[in-house]
Image 1 (cartoon, rainbow, N blue to C red):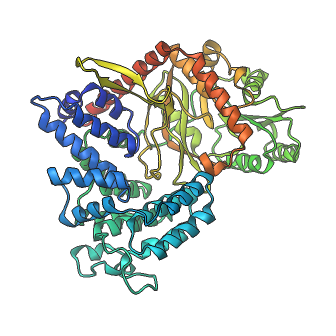
Image 2: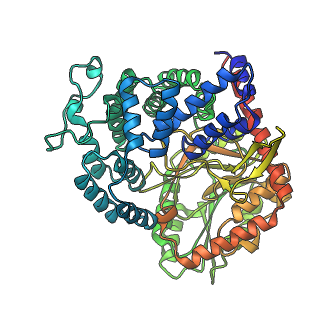
Image 3: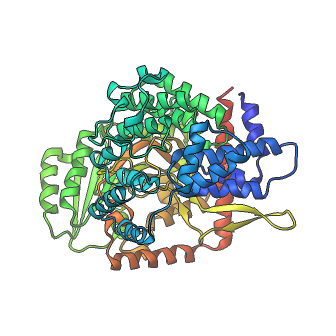
Length: 581
């Protein structure tokens, strides 16, 4: 498929669909909503067959990413009955997943409570109880898989995956590509617990488990074998990630190119493929000019020690570090003195007598003479762990987008690295048809910036480089030009939360470019969501600051930002399509 064919497909889409798909994201509820909306607004035109094909494949993408999701399976089953796309055994599997229901709602309520509190032990106990009481019920498998991604406990999840292996056919043509132990269960159970799960899905789940464990060669072989049995695009894309993590760039590109031909509407695949072809996924040199790494900390001594250890082990390219002790009362001062002894003049330490909050701490660091002389600064959380060549990935982003004044990264949880905490941020906004056929914008859920990454694990689907509306403040670069012309952080957002988002929006309204560098993975010690155990008082502060944030910007401002973001994404994709000639 040449560039003109890709462009034709994107141009044939209704505007609301093009806007939604440009933002990308995981194959979750938003994609399914967009697919259903497409069918409701499907125009009677020469492109009807093309758009119907896109609709069908969008539904397939959602189900492939989460087989056991009842809603996704139900829609997949309904669509496949009208427009057959699945092999026979996968048809039966989709029907079984769609029909799966809990035996009683009390267990669901208990599960929801445990999920909300992220009580891992209670979740495990409840799921094991349901597994014993409702043998073969696929409804609970989805939550076991989710818990494995969120907790990082692969050994517990292995018992669920192993229960699927008793009936794998050992004599099939693909068996030579599969490790020998895959054809028989390592569990002591004598009967197959989940007979409704076909061989391709069993292999894919086994592949995911190997991926979770970091065994990329095995995961890649399993995904390849699964694709041989049932050619689902998701298997192909995940195989590409396994190959890429082994350094097999050409083989990974071949898989992604094939996936892009099958799924040209899925922008995440196009972004990853074009970055790989242009070698934009590799670190380069340090960002141009002189820089400074800035940290501020309050009573996180052990986390700070780990963050500084990661910095010291990385290639700093001679870049200095300034750390502000924000009135800590634990052993933070001792940690900072110890690292000053090791790093010498590389580490500058400033101590203030009381906690002034995040925005003021950030601004205070900017006032240091050594920082005033910097061409760029990078703010790093005191519990963020950078990889060895992290500055090189910032340099690569700057080289690809020389006008960028803010650059952020992909953030995952340290204890559960399959859990994505933040990726590129865009407004949750869309275009909808009125009764008169005119397109009008609306804001969903009150102008929310979303990362478009929900329950999907990190299989590389957000490992790309492109413009965005905002990035996480956990680890982000800001240029001197931006600091001088857009200004510092707003003190109204003290003590913390959304001061970084607000500044990104202010910069965007001023016409400044923000870029997401998803090839840079930063591990965050603090957990996200319910797993973070955020106190009620802090939740109240978050709510208050969120109200301040959206009271700062009018609807016209937000609509203007959506226009700007959409156009930047469109232009970026258009340029990339030329590379596929």
